[in-house]
Amino acid sequence: MTDVLYFYVSLFCVQHSLFHELPAPVNHVLEFLAGWYAAPLGLLLIVFVYWFVGVTATDRLANQRAVLRGLMSALIAWILTVLVQLLWLLVLRGPQWKETVAGWACWEGVPSACPAAAIGFALGATLWRRNWHWGMGCVLATGLWAVAQVFVGVHYPLDVVVGAAIGIGLAWWLRSMAWLDRPLDVLIRLARRFMLA
Amino acid sequence: MISVTISILVYAALAFVAALGALEIAALCRGLDGLAWPIGVRHRRLGNFVAGLLMALSLAGGMLAKLLIEPLGPLLSVMVILVALGLALLVAILGATLRLRRRRQRNSTALRGGKLVELGPLQARFYQPGREGASPGVCLLPDPTASDDNLHALVQTLVESGIAVLALDWQSLGSVDRLMLQGVVAVGVSHLARWPEINAARVGLIGVGLGGDLALRSAAMDQGVAAVLAIEPVLSEKRPWEGLDALSLLSWFEARRRVGRWRYSPLVKELDALTTISGISPRPAAVIVGCLGGTETVEGLEILRNGGACSLVPAAHNRAVQCAIDWFKEHLV
Image (cartoon, rainbow over all chains, first blue to last red; front, side, top):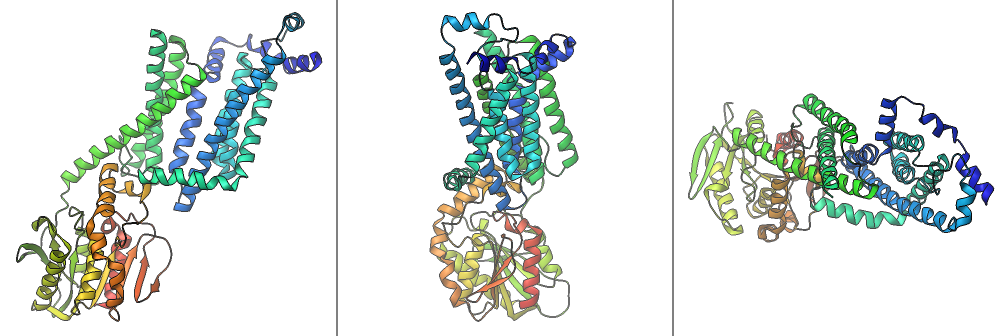
């Protein structure tokens, strides 16, 4: 277990040490990108605009279904990352772990799945399967967000990998559930009543 | 506590500005005038520039705010952004409504020109084509629930095609019921048929929206009608909701009002246009609808599809007007 944890926190650890040597303006930009304003806003705006676009009525319906699926998978992915973090906290409780990790140079706290990667890749993967251009936009924004979080030291690189796996896996899984179309269509019809879909 | 409140307000304002820009882009992409604010869809280039500027401002403001105020936590941040998106949607709808209302006030929709005709309590306008000899004529029935429809293009194109038009004005009647409407249409048709320059054997009816339902029923009752065309008739109160497309020409509030009038007007049920269609045969009858597809015929009724026009403002759409003219040229001229 100790070896696994050591491997987890020390992999690509060099990037973290590089961060301290970057110029102050770059650090400021990275901190800005790593925060919960720029990237989440960008992702939500992509989803927001995608809701409205589409050449034909059938296109628009498919886009709106993709948006709802994406939001749903992002929400579930976020919850899963919280559960993963709780699981790590449960495993790493007790004073013996504190003594073990005290000497590790790369130790930055208990590992967890990166919620940024989970949310962003869940949205990106869902949109990608409908329209890869829009999916690519989401994936790029998420990539930037997650990398910035690693550089700033909010997450370990493997947190991002785990988060991305959760997000993409969930998006693929939800996309294969054809029965979800019916409840989603109910929501879209409701939005149509209010001229919003 | 105060610093968190300030952070919430600042980030909400920044997200709101960015969301306004995104909405403007979405409205321009889809041609949704009822959602485009601050710039309407007619000024696409300026609109895109303003949208880009708003989003750039929000991004730059975010970077500046990072230096000056406390960043928000993940959950709070997402909630603030979602609230800002909702507010931006609300403001865009309200702003576009005011912009469209101002434009409507500037460009009056009331029919002008022609000759004012008094048919008992009803007023109408008669438009005659310039050509020599007896011409065919149509009685134009606006939607009784949306009497402020802009019918200029339809009237003008009909007249230019050599068809005389008698456009009835429901506003002069005040409140109306089915029997009164049918009576007035019968008077209009007979008046048109008696006009010296009109060929009495080639008098048709054209109705818009609920006026289309009225046209179909009146044609079934009146054998003097040679051909009838309904543009986007309502036909049933269970008609599917129009959705976002309605915002391409109308403001959100106007679109809701029109749908509500169609859905809850007793006239739709009373006119029951669908059951009267069999009574029109063998005279030509057609409806123009906004769905994509070709022309087809169902039990004596021709269905012409004009390719996705907004069904709430049918007569404002060029393809619907052209479709109507082509059909009348084939069956009446």
